[in-house]
Image (cartoon, rainbow, N blue to C red; front, top):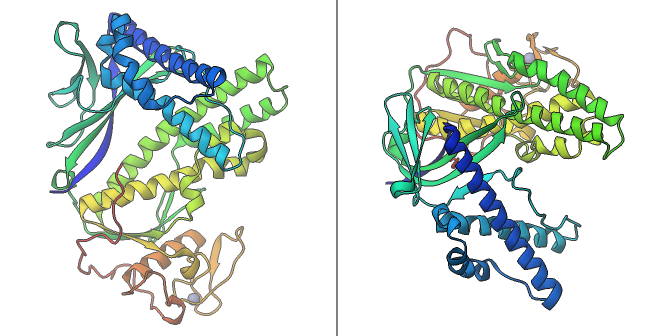
Length: 436
Ligand SMILES: [Zn+2]
């Protein structure tokens, strides 16, 4: 049976003594990381030798004999921290080779070290109790920590794969929050979702509204996001006036980073909710395929290079909101498969949904600022985004070998809204799910 990977995240509720211990463990991991970095630097400086991950891994038992406080962290978790350093070096060398000038891997202060990872199911266990809560056991025997957590994942059958403990400072209270991010291996059958309806929808994801549907309905961007964006723009404007490196500049950078983090967290929740609801109600979901640059663009880019890239409010909004498109596509892809729904990704360049008339299939060129579609050929008159959503839905209904090919030659009638064909549901998705 095929297995899928699914990442689930829980908020942890450590007691104050557990909190102290977790902080201590992070400090030890940070210490190990920095010591290993130091060793690599010195070996290179003094002897021109590069030390590999395996060299460092092999010295771990000796280090543990000398430092028994490391033992309870678990040898695999310690190895993973060494691997983390190794990955930083590999990324560094890759960029050097590519002719870039990356920063050398840096020492990390233990207060800013983000956490640690158990790369396999050894040394921890997730115990679920009842519908809402559970316990995470770290370590074993008498010294094991039993940490309360809230939430529950939806898989009845699963094999735990790895665990990352993440420490993040809550920007509102200044207190540390701990999360457990767990990868589960889940049998394909256990991933299945219940579909409660057989709707067929075309969607145009946008900036003004999160989603525009073919029937003219819309889902707005959540209110908190609409409110956070002007605030973000304002902070960035303020920072642009400060001297880089000054106290105020750093303060503002911190505020901006926090706000970005909060936006990223809540946006993910929102998109999870929306995409789950969509695949639950829809047998067919049609939308445009995404250009690759939209998929890979991350909010982090705006944190690192904010002054230049997000000068204008519109640019900032596009930057922040378009990250969600890739995320929505990714979630729709695997959730549609789990629900047995079809996700149709129309070929944007060939289909040109925003320029095509959903009434007569003629090309009706319009500039980006024209928000209304009025067809001179058939008189079709619709909001621009609704027209696009209808075009991608019609594209999905057209039998075709390669999505989006030859569409211009084909004349499609506009079906009456009420009489949408409730045609057969293909059970196999047109795309393959990417593991999350
Ligand atoms: Zn027309």
